[in-house]
Amino acid sequence: MDGIAIEVQNLKKSYGDLEAVAGIDVQVRQGEVYSLLGPNGAGKTTTVEILEGYRERTSGEVNVLGYDPARGERSFKQRIGIVLQSTGVEPYLTVEEVVELHRGYYPSPRPLDEVIEVVELTAKRKSRVGKLSGGQQRRLDVAVGLAGDPELLFLDEPTTGFDPSARRHAWAMVKNLQALGKTVFLTTHYMDEAQNLADRAAIIVGGRIVAEGPPGTLGGRAEAPTSVTFQLPPHAPPLPEHLHPHVSSSRGVHLEATEPMKTLHDLTGWALEHDVELESLSVARPSLEDVYLSLTGEPSDAAASSPAVPAGERPT
Ligand code: ATP
Image 1 (tube, rainbow, N blue to C red):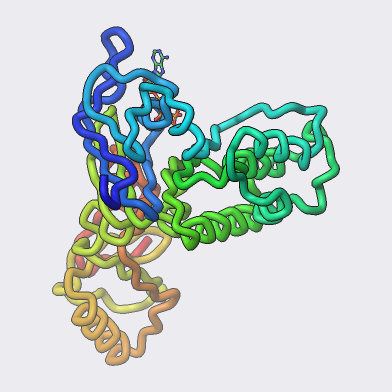
Image 2 (cartoon, rainbow, N blue to C red):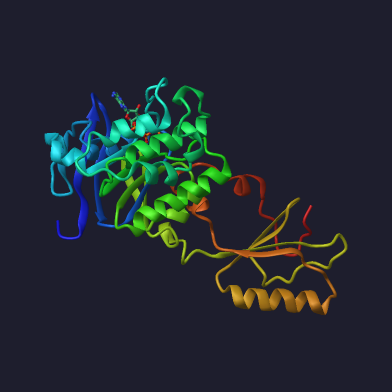
């Protein structure tokens, strides 16, 4: 386990006839932020709860910080921190009382003020939990997970209900944790969260991992064609044949460029020659969301609303 925080081999979990986790392999290095992405029912919670020791596996090897989580050892629980989707912490306690209570469960907890500060609840430290907003309660959940100063933190959809500014603060907090050498295992539905935080991400669908890697290259993103999009003015001449394949819609023209420099050179050369303004010109690699949608089989808006038309036809 040298340098490895989590090692999972051929993990399976069945509920009756349903194989919720169908033989996955996962390896997470110490100090890494690893994200598990997947649609509802994909097997994320089942996997995470097996790693945390809260669910029994059907078969496979699981090693977390050198422990088999299924044994439920106290020393194991002291070294991990868990942020569940909803913890339902005691509504009549104040923020600082809740954090203090949870700090008391651990041999070397993180300082109280620091935990509260890191989740941006200093102004609310004397407030009762029942009076907090949904986003503030989720931040308190993160504080509870942090209280024991764990070396491995499980964050199950940690920013659901956060406003954009609170999410940014939570992301900064995760980065701080990583800077301190913590390992973070994160499940999320937010692609931008995985993109921003994860060193590596895995996409799980139907209990199987269908792609794994750094978010920037996941699912062949690095090799996928670049999207060039722009608007043509109403009376522009047809695009040349070789700028193909492309699709046009009310939102403009979309080219798939395998050689983006050459495509841009040809396109802008053609536009200058014909005195055509390419409005809203943008160049983008497929987003993590595009990859996710194609791997999980969910339709993407762009694909659904951009019918292919032959080269040379005008956008409608
Ligand atoms: P979500 O994003 O909705 O939380 P998930 O990826 O976490 O989904 P799981 O909760 O792990 O998915 O569920 C995987 C599959 O196992 C689902 O089909 C679910 O209905 C089923 N399942 C989960 N827990 C149980 C259980 N205790 N008994 C029977 N089936 C279960």
